[in-house]
Length: 270
Ligand code: DGL
Image 1 (cartoon, rainbow, N blue to C red):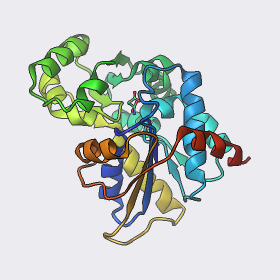
Image 2: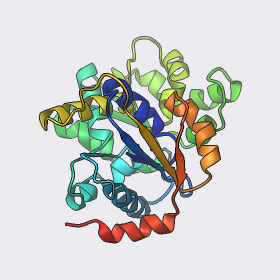
Image 3: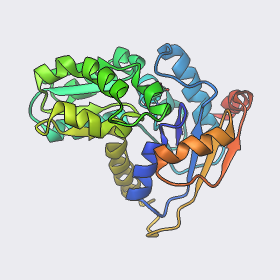
Image 4: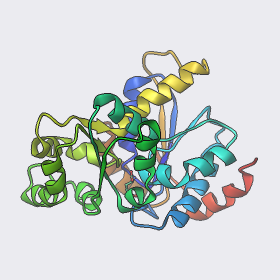
């Protein structure tokens, strides 16, 4: 699995809950985070490098835990990787379509919203759906800073971002960024109980399990899966902050330089 940084550990948490026996290798590209404010072209290059590093472990599947990387690069990764590649956008969109027959709201980074990936995934399944997309660039730094959900700054920023969506009252609201599940309580309170929140992380875990089961590749062990983490920057900081995202202690965090990721791109075949 890879992500631009720590946020993808929310997907690790969901995957581990769905498949506790799986051994996971996680790459967080903390040296180059955030992806969400970068051009799609740049994110595609980073995503390809991240995936090629992971391909070296010969995994049975690569999971793109980052919404922005999924939005920018899933087609490219599916073309270039030998193993199956899973994203978080298509499962998130499908879960929202299943949750409501009405309009769907999407909260995500600037790059994800600008890519139109969620909008396309929803409209491909149902061209008549109304999609209300909102980029929320301040939420990633706010979550990384560890602000509590009832912190006045958090509520102030969320109130501003959610104003139009509160008025429009969509039938479901997609949390289309790795960091947003950590704000789900505050977002849920502001949107009210009639708007179900759809976590792309949770939806992706369900989909990964389904795809692995179809390939007869699920590790059936009820417990004991390992987690090996790599970070392209400070390993100590990754371990310390990562606990909040992953909901568990990170025993093993190793450093890998972005130059090594660039080199491994050469080994990605097909
Ligand atoms: N992981 C990113 C996402 O889910 C959020 C952080 C970033 O902007 O890199 O879109």
